[in-house]
Image 1 (cartoon, helix red, strand yellow):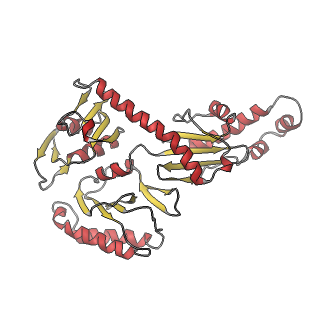
Image 2 (tube, one colour; image 1 turned 90 degrees about the horizontal axis):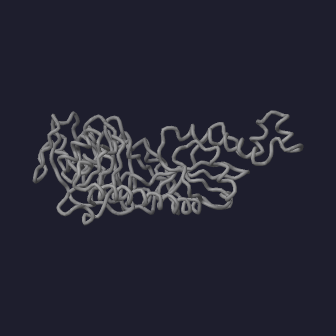
Length: 376
């Protein structure tokens, strides 16, 4: 449900729900709470009280859903009691977001203060989060040397080590797993198992562990190693999203913070280029059947899984509803039962495997509330 990511430059861990989890279908209602977090150290009970007070301001929003505001408070309390003794203080954050339903609970510390508000609806309200935590900032780092092997998971805010099973810790341990004759021929006699062959064997064993640990993942993988090891590792690699750029140098000499900073420079460039390529596709096909800036058309396409790239403005709201069969009603102001349609488009796009980018309003076509590139 959530990832523990060690924040660079701080001792605290943050709970950062993955967008795939937030965008999944959940038991309704989906309750989203945003608030500033200026509570002093040891003030977890104060945070809970403020969250409950915010929930009560949204009591009318629970109408039509199989949950009362009182039940929502109990749900919040049941989750909070299990974490309050273990939640570390994270001094680098100024805001907090809570996402909960009967079958899901996630929280995320935000880098800037957020105005306090609650949204109760059919989907989690992720649009404000998209401004702070982009969907494309998740990556993996393989710190590779002949003495140590470590896999990390990270975002722009930090990295944490990720466990790999049945992976040799170093080249010597890997050689111990070879047949006796091959091991001793390689180390003491003849060229039948030269240094590169030993490294290939070592890296294939590592690749098996990486593939098992990252099965089903699509985030980029950065290798941190000395120059000559990387081309050899690429021969053994089977993970499809290995980046061509690397962190050069012996990772054994880097602190976690230095490793995060170096790897983030690599992946940030990759993410920026991917966003630029996506928007270039939109511009190349603007005013064609492959793109649209019509909100109704985009929401319907997102619901059908046809949106490849979605570009949202950083500000503004548009309320309405998606009704069968594929009808979108747009309202001048929020009405009972409404969804925020830009948020709905984002949730549906992520749920169907598309990519969402938040852009300054002036990058969208004049007068457009949204822009999208379709898969077909």
